[in-house]
Image (cartoon, rainbow, N blue to C red):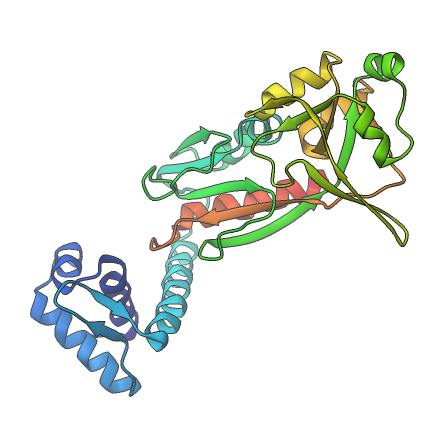
Length: 296
């Protein structure tokens, strides 16, 4: 058995947790799976799996081998596609998820170019501000904003954007323009309930640093609600450039306290754990990264 097939067998055993399930997936006999893993451990001279009566678990060496094997298999699949000359003709379903407002403003308007390049591809975009279970929802790749707190995720940071304090000109005319972060305590705060920053923010200007615990006049669970509340003049919000990009350009909202900086908003792509990254998903991420960096 060649080494690539050996890697694929090991990957399936780790992901399924058993020889029998891996055998059914690969459509080969369980004894063949057992012999392959035994031969692999013998060749490498290390124990890769811990066997129990209920499940197989990878050792530390097994985890390292698994991670490298996943990358090697994905790269080999991509090489096959490129060699066959069908890289521009990806087929089948690709299921992506993204926060609602980000997708509406920055992804959906541009998807036509990606789909035109791959006419046999069927793309499903799940737009949801919640952090959903990628495996349960059968997601191939997810777009997420903010600071990741789960270290177990297979993630890659693509880029980041500035955060601003923004408000509608009519609101500022009515309430006045804050000149210091502490002034925000006298204003109506609109808080995004799922924000990675929450209500406490660190403002920096040169060597100065000011921490402000914002007082929420209105808390909303969806970014679309934040947009409407700010645009209708109900208060200020702390948000990324991405959320109000059209309005910042048109002047419908105004950034304030611009001499103070806030932590940037990070943009990530997330892959479901325990699932091989498809060529389709990798092609989408490559296109998406190029599109976002070009549009900055």
